Length: 381
Image 1: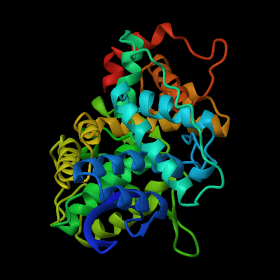
Image 2: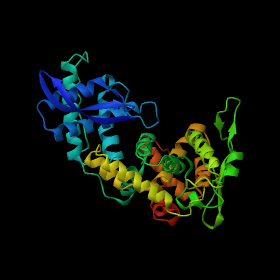
Image 3: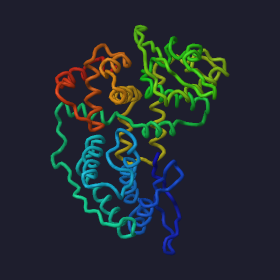
Image 4: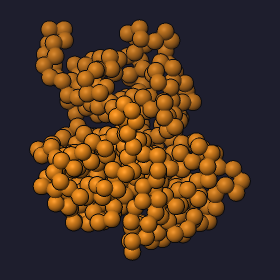
């Protein structure tokens, strides 16, 4: 996970200055953008340097996503082609993050300056002459594109989730571990907030039977998890592998305090507040905002998100999984999510295609159903 970190009192040419660094895993600086930020710190205001840093942070985060299905451009900034740069501007900044032309033009100025600096310092054999082509028309306000923009605002990548998990308050270790798991249960198992504390869900005895250990003691879940929703309606959910170890670790903690239900207090008594997931998410976002490391745009984005967005992320990622495994996305995603019909899943098929630049052919999706499904109660819940 990349982050922008303020660094103070650096000696440059005999002068002490403050600047920013782009760090990987909160420890290792990425040399080229960090040196560029130090360079411009000698002649620019702190606010300007931070803006440059946040622009480059977005760019290098997208570079680091090359191994995922959402990657648009190659890992090394030296290898980025003109087409890839334009895809970054239009598909990533404009479509996914919904940035206005004014903000994108600032990103272009940052990237142009960075690449000129990289060439002048010998980090590239040839100067990059990007065309920086951006659609001149403003984002349309049609209902369908409004839906797309809203889903893009709500969608969180695994890096976004990690940012959330790292921001869970740590003043109480038990509550910290529990609420980190709360967020992961939304993202990796599509729990609604009230389902977290449903007495038939997440029972310690049931989880003991669900989780299997191999000869090395490594946990796995090979069967679907049963989740009781409204009216005790049951759905079978595929649990993503990323959830298994954290779930197993907190299960051990819950058993040590004598809890019968995974969502419990430190004395083992069960939580009963149906909105616990919503409140936990909001506390974490508040902590993230108070950290002061977000740009204005990023802070505004996080304010618009809520716990239920995690469930929508699960649905979108489930479509990607079905494509990868060659299984029926309408049948499985609809059942995993507990939707009443396939029409609600159409929204996620459509958004997943936009997110991952996937081409939908022929009658693969019925566009006429998307607006109707978006307005339905089934989608909101």
